[in-house]
Image (cartoon, rainbow, N blue to C red; front, side, top):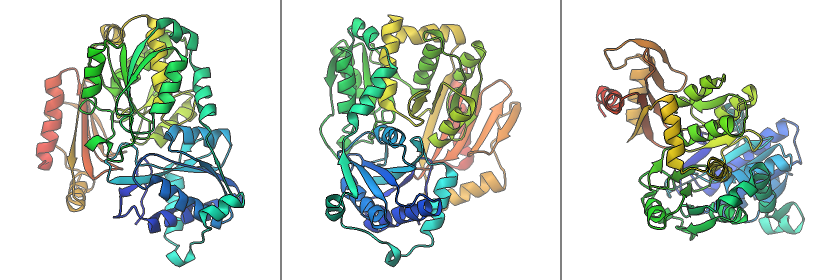
Length: 470
């Protein structure tokens, strides 16, 4: 069964990620587009560096053209935000990208985008699933890729220049030039290198790069820019005395960073830094959006500036929708994805990196000092998280316990309220919180918590895990 999660459809290669299922998903999308009156329209498609990504996007293109649609093929492995930008700039109704983002190398998947370059919301993906359920392999029509290309039904181009120019127009290039920043980048064997280097060199930064070669195994690690994965980047930053280290995940829609002292900057801190920068230095006004597993330090920054911070479920489609609804100037998640008003509606690690450089240039201070200034002003919150592998059987058992029997651990402190909107989240009267939710992209149960004390935060997670026998 093909089921969309919080970040598109993802599956293990040769298990559920197969040619048959790729064709089936694309045929379902074709049926939905025809039902919506978009028959014969153009669809933007692209792919990342994962194993089978290029072949898979060709199989999808064959089904699209076989159903009478024209295909705008981004003809080289590219960042997912570039594909989203192209959907928006070409004003197509739909687009898709073959990628599994930050998942382990054994995974691949497909993200579907809608008008404006937004992640398809739950209503759209449910409609695609509904169409898929009505299709058999014999119903799928396709046209040979080379034939479709020769007939002009597939157009191959590289829209990188337009995407890069859109970012350069959105930042203060001259200010960054004057700062003479030394930057180390780590694209984690993914698709972020070229875009990052072009932007950084245009801004006259001194750039060094690691992990740039094409490796479908991502060096044996998950291509997620977390603290463990960025140890080498941290060493590089300190030994070469760089101002900052920048990393992007496998499809370059997430940002990771290392400060000048070689310390990992958690995505929570990055969101706070950039929101604070937009408000204090750029003089922007507007709310922010975060998911339910992201720091409430954002709420303090927003309140201090007369703004509001909105909370949504995990999945960037929820962040994008709330940003559009409220006019928020920034939105993001604790996993490193963020969007800024005026750019694409989805996550973009490349643009976020460029804005980070502008912040360093404008503040004229090291990254660690800027963040310490924020903590001095708003106080420190201690965030913690954990992820535990989960079998389907165990997941079903725990879901029954939590969501049907509504049983929860006892914490011996006063609760403000409980939310079951996405997993189960306990909000305490003192402003601290703990959430337990099942991942929509991997077989994991995830915990996140925050309080004003690291020991308390760790205790929240430990108590919940012990309650569930994990």
